[in-house]
Image (cartoon, rainbow, N blue to C red; front, side, top):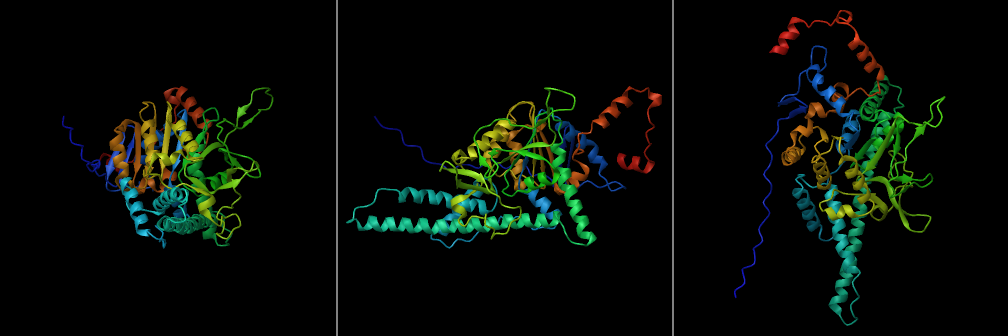
Length: 482
């Protein structure tokens, strides 16, 4: 009996690219607009022609039972640009260790596989981590007998390579940490300006209003609804700093006062208050937000806990601290808890990141949930998969706000998901600009019950008692018709 021939391995055929989008794309409910040119302002400098469709739609989405906000690096970049600070440098590092070319190829291959264009520092860190994992396996093998000269030479070579690449990883992480802290320092100086010039003070006030207008637009939810849950892939502490500035109370997985420690328990610890004159009926406190940092943070470190075992602790690292600060680790590769973009699902199983991604999936993959993304480039497969699974629930919705189409990844994602009725789009340099977005399109950042009461009162009045509405000027009317 002849055996059938073994199947030959074939190269994987890449998925066809989605059709190219114009520079500005809007889809907000029934309203849709695609154009190479941004919307033109009215005579008063506002964009009411687009605002009348977008702002009410976003306001309606914010009233969902479960609302989550996913922030990518574009959020920090937008705030940094508005404040005149230097954006985070994600460029690649130069390694002097042996086989550096192989690491560069592995980083470039991983970035191309995820359609993220050229490799960045995260891809390099991932490649170096994989290389060190293989070297640790070889280093922990049984020692060769004394008469095995080749085996002993190989073991020495493995030890030398592991030592060289551990030092290279420490250097790359130290430079990356310095870049994150430098961005924080620039934003801090712009927000907390002590200069005597009026221009500097005005810019600081405008930046504070910008940060408040963005965060409070999502955080100002009625306390009777579930708390806003912010997820971020960023390593900086801009969300934490902005929350402190605005008086928001963050609830995360860390428990403790002297050394806050990451805990696996998912207890819904929340804040309440007792209204005056009411006994036994506590109310939810306003201004409470949940926060999950999916890729770790620059102030997360492995530290020995009271039990003697290593724990994930949040250290007291000031916002925008100098690289020489005592809390900055000397060997970041051994203690710093930052997580590069993953190309393999098994990487997300490591502690504590498995717990963080469970929180993400549990928050968005449920009925009547809304996820708003800003500055996220859809370059993380593990995050994209959760968003795709979320949209399999018919009552869920995703609102994507982006400065561009993320190198084609955003059209590819939307084309692959194929659920346009569940996806809101605000794409382009006009809609993705943080200043324009806050000033024209985001909902009013307040729990404004008075406006709703006024609308109800006006709706109950007879028509002849309704306030007169101004008639549009002929020029404006003809302009809209044209």
